[in-house]
Image (tube, rainbow, N blue to C red; front, top):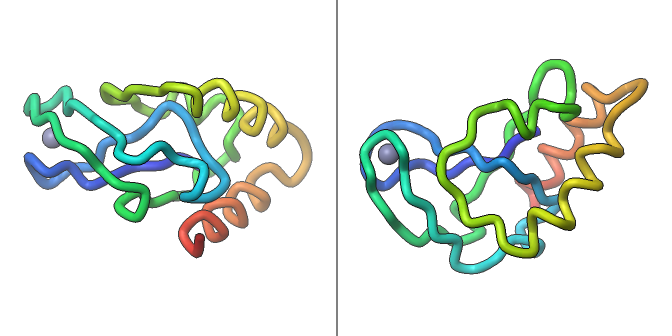
Amino acid sequence: MRLYVNCQGGPHRLYFIWVAQTRADLPNPINVTCNLDGTAADYHPWEVYAEAQAGGTAGGAILGGLLGILAGPVGVVLGGIAGGAIGGGAERQDAENARRFNGS
Ligand SMILES: [Zn+2]
């Protein structure tokens, strides 16, 4: 899955390069600078949403479009989570992870 916020500067999403299992795992606030319109803003965990990705998390979290993000300690923790999704059932698991995140 990948996590995103709705940009405060325009009608688009800003995707993060890292993922978290729940909103409680996110830093607060999260300062993001949009690389489309240059808008810098602080976002809060409750403004972050998850979406499942076809094909599961493997690789997608990294390749799937990153726009400037301050990773901080979260990025380190989260690398392992993405790696763990590799393998059978990754796509179904990814959808479950996204659902769980959005409910957190
Ligand atoms: Zn923007």
